[in-house]
Image (cartoon, rainbow, N blue to C red; front, side, top):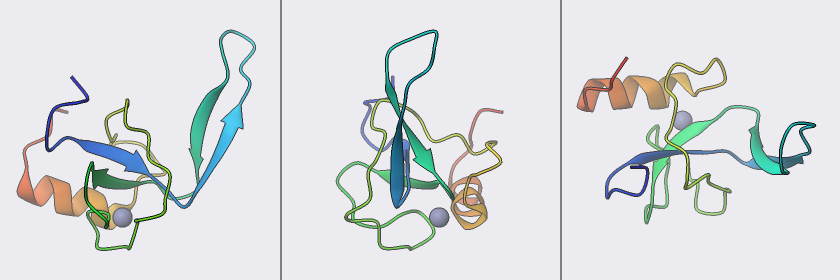
Amino acid sequence: MAWVDGAWHPTAPVRVLEFPTDGPPRWRLDGLVHARRIGTLAAACGSSAAEWPMLMTEPFDHRAPEACAVCVATLLGTERLAR
Ligand SMILES: [Zn+2]
């Protein structure tokens, strides 16, 4: 479950509200997406993320094309992620 302690969640400086035709409005992060843990002030790559919005109900997707390469490398280097 995404709420487990220590889980990585997507975070980015900007988020936009989307209005998909097939569902309710939802937040989407814009631009480079970083990985961050709940309760921490910085992303995995070291970027200061204290004021960035964070999708706490979603896991960070290290395979996403917009994922921060440094965050991905940090996560893959410290943890085994399911592929
Ligand atoms: Zn990053």
